[in-house]
Image 1: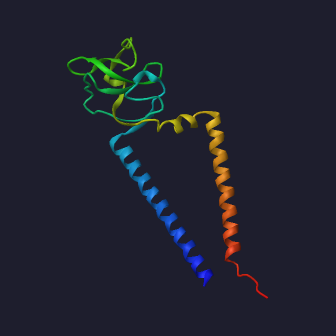
Image 2 (image 1 turned 180 degrees about the horizontal axis):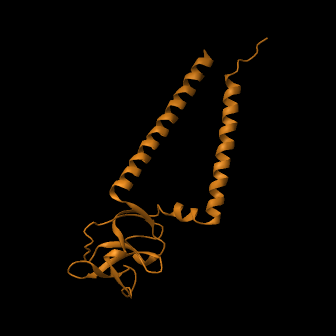
Image 3 (image 1 turned 90 degrees about the horizontal axis):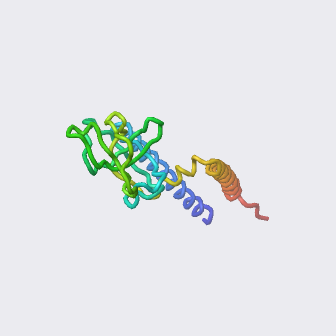
Length: 175
């Protein structure tokens, strides 16, 4: 009797894990569809120039604006000629919105360059404060090393649990 109850409990746990896996896979698939469908791109805030709206480590979602017309108070992400990516607020724009001046919310002066709509990657549509820290961590040697150690640890733990489950499923010898 005791063995059947234990098997049922283990079976329920396996079904629960399966549902978590399937749910995560569906969620990931939906995110990929939205990502490609809307042109959504994710970026991490690396400096305090946009405080308090976007703290360092925030994950921001940026969607391209097909019209290319930006207005004051829009928060945009754009690429500078040197390749750096910047997220700042539009403070001034030409009437057609194709040229603009920007400024970080926490900066005391506006940016020293004009931005054309061709440089703009898109408009910030939402952010998750501090959610970008894992991504920033993965860009470091320490983060990559930690990730590999966690994967190896998880694999070892999975192997140990599998062996223990097999041992517990074996019938006990009674004399």
